[in-house]
Amino acid sequence: MKKSDYLAILKEHLETKISPDELEDILSDYESFFHAGMEDGKTEEQISDELGPPAFWRNRCSKEEKKISRISVLPFPRNGCSRF
Image 1 (cartoon, rainbow, N blue to C red):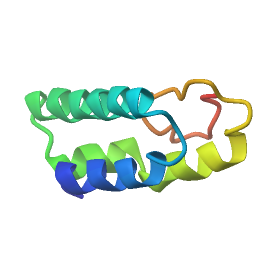
Image 2 (image 1 turned 60 degrees about the horizontal axis):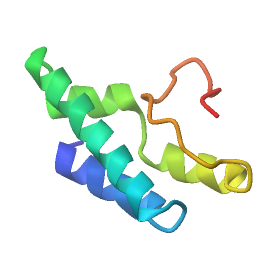
Image 3 (image 1 turned 90 degrees about the horizontal axis):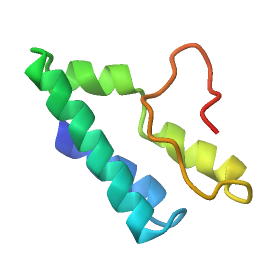
């Protein structure tokens, strides 16, 4: 998936779940993940595959929204989820 598509989906999934400041921070972090990956010679598609599906965060936020004050923006954990 292209970076612009990935970030647009991520934004769409999170914008009603978190504050605008948190959303801006998360999107900035993900921009950085793409930038660093491209500096390492990876394609946008490779990076988005490594990050995992953007819908993961929407689903995680829905389950945890009452307990979360800030979302961790570490890449999608391939061996399970324990970021919150």
